[in-house]
Length: 223
Image 1 (cartoon, rainbow, N blue to C red):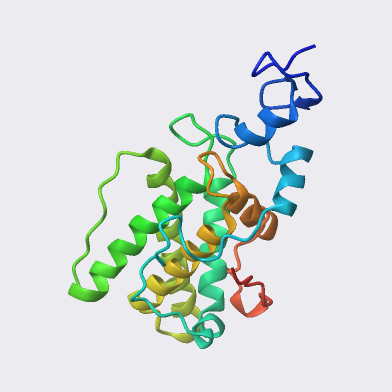
Image 2: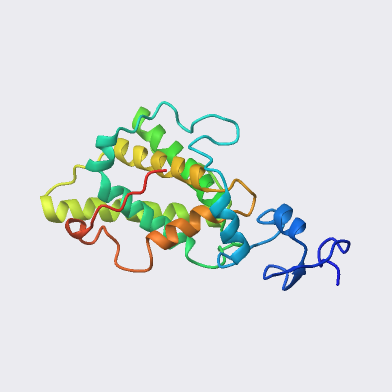
């Protein structure tokens, strides 16, 4: 029998994305490019184990928001904020399909994080609230989850401290940290969900760490 995709080479493995058998070459070339590979596909999981780390740089070689410095001390001081935002991202990506009917991808998360970071950068620099316009429903959903997490964080601080000490610059740094982490963990392919799968495994459906920050352990995983 020939490969379902190319129709030339011999089929050797079952592909859950096409519900048929394909050849290893098509699997390697089309994985997360034209194929919506499910996260539990053994060939996808095996490929991820052998992929070289991308580092924090995007394909163009530039670090996103290079002017935003993230010191190690910040990661310790704002650990609960980062955990809360990570949980919000995992929650927004948990649905199998996004609001526009397409599977949520790393590119969706990275684009949404970039837009949010730009908005907070404008707020920090000029004290003006500016939302990056987008018609993408998935990006809007992610932005709502993140803004809800920030609001919950400030409310939790107010409850436990009597005031909120979270600064917009702190949110900006946390968003840039998560953005760089996403760029380091995604495969870079159009349909990659490596970053989404990482967040889903680290932050399963449960109570948000913002609800009781004093009980949350150190769970920040550096890119």
